[in-house]
Length: 339
Image (tube, rainbow, N blue to C red; front, top):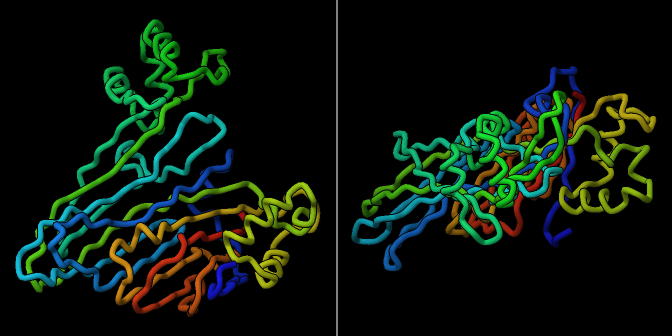
């Protein structure tokens, strides 16, 4: 654990509720995406600073509010950016938690600038072995981020077209459906970024808010249950959890209260994970006035993450405040609860 980082675990038990957003993923485990916030690309002579950042993360949404000021004598033409992580689809065993239905704006990013909607323009490309294959996919009307109807899109192609895509290594057969028809998976990597230009007038603070759906990773069990966490075969996984989420004895005490004591997961615990790319969310650190709220969403979940100077502000939420804040690491949040 890094020096100065406080271990924090809360076990708050309440009424049993129906499953949250991750419950829809009951048939597979999904990998969470590390998402952050806006970046500023400004002229070298511009004096544009972020006065405050207010972030709230929950299993449903991430909301980040910025107060930005141009302290220079002249208007500053600034490019606001929002970078999404690369999506490598070459491993069929990896299933990303893609929270939105739009294959381009796949986290449902919405923006307000000075109280008015300020949509970002997105640029997206597909890369394969160092080559740009975007045009090939566009030609055949295949979404670069293969969400939802990808198999239907492939099925609509002529057989010789699919064969050419296979020969070119753009898709690969991964098995067959129940009718015996071949199933394919993509092999490319998608790169996506959004941007918007804004002119900041001198000495006029501008409020910017971004909101997007949380990429919520989920597993149908957790190696931290008592019958499992002392097994030699999962020792490396347990240690990685301890490091990533600053797990301590208080967390285990809370977990053991809601977990079944037998090896089978009869309590139907689900492990959910969130990552907030703090270093990308605070582009001009140190931030003069920084606030972060982590909400676990339900009172019957146990939660652990690495932050200091925390205050409990509700049955499910915890707040951190800091002045002149510079993030030392991204925030990883672990949530465990019943289905």
